[in-house]
Length: 125
Image 1: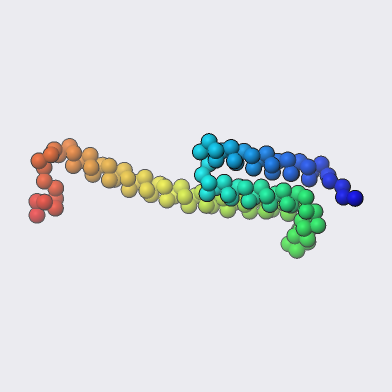
Image 2: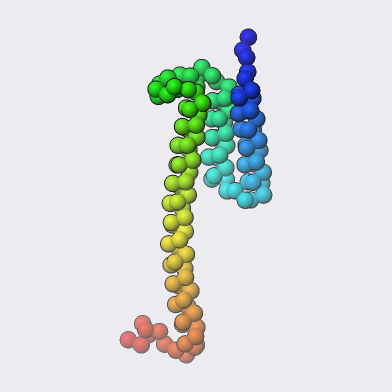
């Protein structure tokens, strides 16, 4: 007979609730499908880790970690760092795109302010 601990039940419940939250955010179009897959896969991994105690013990031993909870915490921390790195790259790209768009809008605004009959630099040559 296998005994299920409170921690396993809580971990499984949290994984299910977070998966439902992710699906609801996708439904409301507040989270893109691209990120929803990442979150759903991570919730499945949490649920597997919560209920596959021998697997968690093996991973803990393979990494030389003393406690199973430390293994879960370590992989959670790695996941968060990778997500933050990915979002930082996306944010940097969006910042560059916004800068380029602002320059293009400024050039178009300057061209409009010169009036319809004003020649551009290329036309003057």
